Length: 309
Length: 316
Image (cartoon, rainbow over all chains, first blue to last red; front, side, top):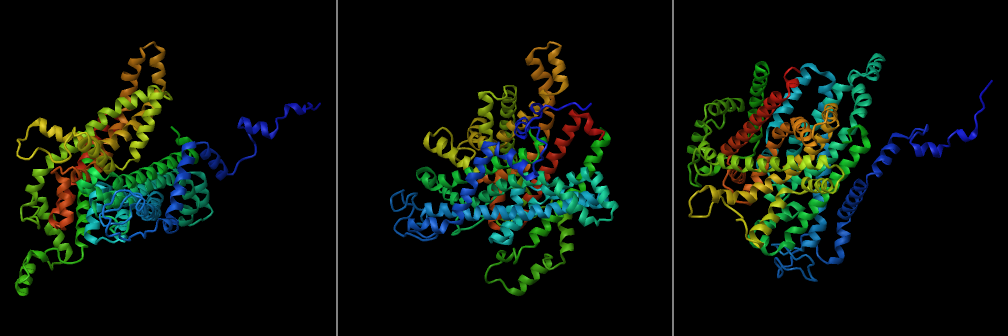
């Protein structure tokens, strides 16, 4: 005799959801988003970051009411104190600091984002090839990684920029040359551990080409740590660009970046008596990097719950 | 252990070779003639050509590389294009000062970070833990050179507690105390980032270890909490911290350039910065090679220490 199920004993979907026992499986993206939004700081970080990007993109519109162009010189107001005319004063060339601060994010953010995307792709391809083929290919590529990682990043970056010339393109090239090894190492490690999985074996058995196996089957499964690393690396590249620009070997005047605006503080008189010139760009770097770090932490927890501390 | 050591030492040779090759290619991809300004404006072009030819400027690059590596291997680093002094002498004069700065920064970071991390982990989710995690999060996000500028502004300009630059007062003798006095501000700000990073690292490593079975065993056999934490857990949680030593060297040496420039600390970093500004090629090659050598050695030491404290590594 069939046992009769009493309706009250069958939990509703809402109850299951509440218990975290839902049979309806979330899509991966929705599950990630749900875990991500649970982390309040990560959401705030993402929000501020989007706002900063918006401000940078709209800089020409936002600064119009201030009445000064990005590189416009107010010749009688050099290193002026804050006033209604120049809310954050002017720099050593008589340019409006507030206007330049708003423009400053343009180069810092776009340069960091594009650099990271390029070397993440480059490094992933190298790491994928090394991890998939193994043997001497792996050995050769990983020794190359060891070699590049043996240089103190900053000194070689400085050397490359000094030798190749002060264009922004050379700065990007230097950062790419020095940064591809870490995603390469990461993807290689992931590939070594998933190379023997059944689904890879299955793909091979049905005759998929190595390229297809590597980038269609394996890479998507190694993507989570790569995305987290890429996010945190954006913060690192912003800091490096700022430091290089501060020393005068990154982005040069008159193009403003938060880093080269800080180099005004190289002058002891500015450092000691005019903090409004150099403190705001420093705080902008700090804020941006902190938001990215929060975002990266949140993404790590959301993308791969196993990695959670 | 001996086999591990031998294997690890042998790995260094191809890496050093590769480092020198990469550096050579980068420096020789420079446009223009770096030696041009060694000649006066009225130098006879024919004489100039002859001298350049004698010096091997027009030799094929592989020939130049072999010559350079031979000289370098025997300790001949050439002469600075700037002041004509031997490169090696200048580096040797400045290297100890940079090592003093970076090792002090590292010591400050590690000696503060370990207790902070341990306290934070043993009181997880307490107010102290909350403060530590917030501050360390800010620490890893703070641009260190901005921190240095703020430190100068506060401690040297506003409150006048510490000097803002140099290693000694002009005209006064080198004594331990004056150097230490000048060292505090740059070393502390240089170590700040690592301090934040290590606190986070020690905390998570400690939390990991405190969850292990042998810690529960130690607790359940009635050991005092202090013994459990400091004797059983701490030792094991410090094992991964050793690798940080290797990881942090490039950052510390890179930081030395910025910090020595900001604080006018007359070490290798300032020397490198000047060499970059003057495009002083022999000096640039030498400082890059020296720093790379220091990083490789540091990684080697970290790996060996790791193998000493964790026998599992040796047999892997």
